[in-house]
Length: 181
Image 1 (cartoon, helix red, strand yellow):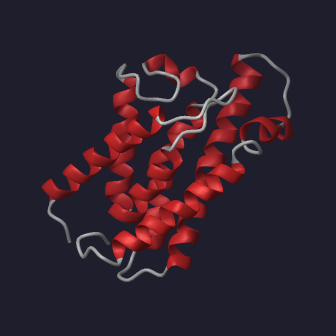
Image 2 (cartoon, rainbow, N blue to C red):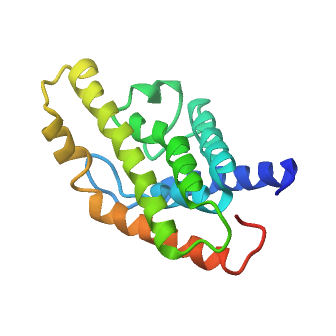
């Protein structure tokens, strides 16, 4: 078990890495491809459920205070962004990935399942937020299928690759480092 200072340092590190992941992007309308999903899942897989969740909570709080660390900027008004549901999911996705992957010498298959489940949490929150935003804030009449077409389908293959990469990195790091669960 880690001491609290060690956990805080790791949470801060992954909050910073997630912010950095927002700036490593490939432009794609309406939302760029970033490394945030990989880092969110990796935070849960490496740090565990609580510390992974804390790292992503810190990331969100920093972005909402005005630091431009989200893919589209920052500030409290970002809550009204169509993509905020995806960001809001980050702590829960990290917690889910961490919870499902816990245990020593975790096999790659278990890490991959945990990462894919964490990804499904991101999509569940994101699609819900996008649907609500488009229908009620933007006053567009869109169906859930239209939201899936714009908020999931263009991203599913890259995100599946990111989930697999997170599981792979967690497997490799976890098999060489005793201080990661």
